[in-house]
Length: 167
Length: 435
Image (cartoon, rainbow over all chains, first blue to last red; front, side):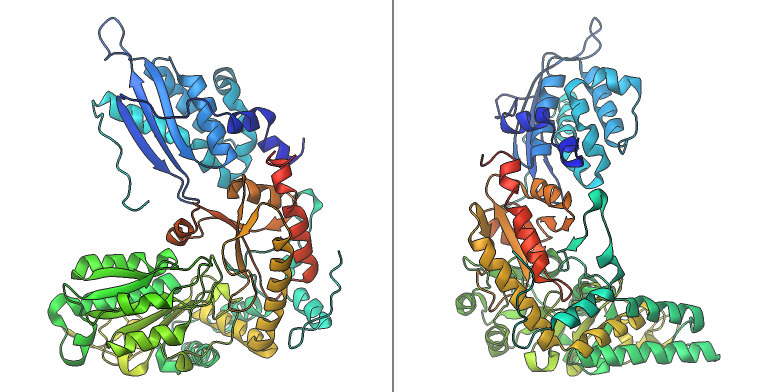
């Protein structure tokens, strides 16, 4: 596989053309707006939790992820694959997956832990991207928005994300 | 296609170009996949000829010492080399040596100016220095074509002083619209900051018209020359602006150094933006008096080795002649624009004729994000810049978020242009936009 094809795998190209979870919905429990500073690409992402945690179930479940944005094939595909991967999972599991995806993105193409391999599913397709530090920001844009939106939702902050004037 | 087109009138000869390329070791580099580097990112940073590194190494190995202090021989030689570099660079830019303040770069130069104006606005400006003190209700005019470094510092100054920020728009080709001047430059306008050449559209601004409008209301003029001085004959005195900012690393020099050029009668009365060592005369526990310019504006230890490297770079450019370099780059730009015009789905974000523009050519490729296009080009050894190039507003004016930019330097060849267009023509196919 050429280095180019190792980045733009068929799975990634499919998701870039047909992104999952794209299109904002209401209501939401947390919203985040993130920008990739190098290209100005933006993503707005909303999460819905099923219920606050209680004694029987110590973690809320992420019942829905919806996002919108514009960006390169990598950022769009990553947000799409992330949405499929995390929707419906308990929040603490989503946080684990975020940490594992970060580990993959830091790997610079080196072999990753079994935990990463076992957990990330289709998101492992971004292993090729990890060898290009300039593109890692593209792949993590959606994940950054997810992490931020989740932390707001867990803090009970359902306010719209702040967007700079004139954008 | 071949790269053996005849050299244009007034440009560089084929033999010269071969010799020039041999002076830049990195141009011989083979990249991953065995591709020879095609460097089309000079607007971001220019490659450096050997003479620049040689000059810096010679200084480090034989004369390195603190300047403007110390009585020993090395200190004297270092000071002489530093001031000699200032003289050579100033002459190259059409300024007197005392009109050239060394800074960390263009961004550093503009921020120094803003810091000086902020100091003046702080209420301590007296007499002639009041010229630099902006008041609430005063106006600062910028343009939509600005690099963030000539926009964000002025937003900050406006916020600090209560001045309002207005801007000149760009036309459909990304050129600063001078027909906006009458509306934008009001009697309360105190300063007009504008780019000489856009780092996105490549369009060259009609400096004389802007200067006339600013002078009519007594406003100061600040020219961002980061993209013009490296590519065109540049004469600070003849341009008639009050200040100009440049970076060495875009004109074959090292990183970490640039200059603020200022007309001497203004520098004489402008308060220093930064204070500390090297720029003072007498210091007591309660106050200090400042040295004359340019030293007044150079607090701290200066970038001595970098100044010496930069002087070698301008020596290299001057030996070839900026008019001939400009003619060479214009011919390459015309060749590039000509071929791009025949490419479906590729829009030039800037003037489509080589006249009145530089060789910074930003593109919008239908259906392909710039990051993806850049990745594809990189796979063939083509180094271009992708993103917003630190100029988000002009991209917004073009209706895009980011672009793919090829930018030319004196060492580029017609064959490289042809190779770029050949690979570029495959981008949309690879990403499935056209089958």
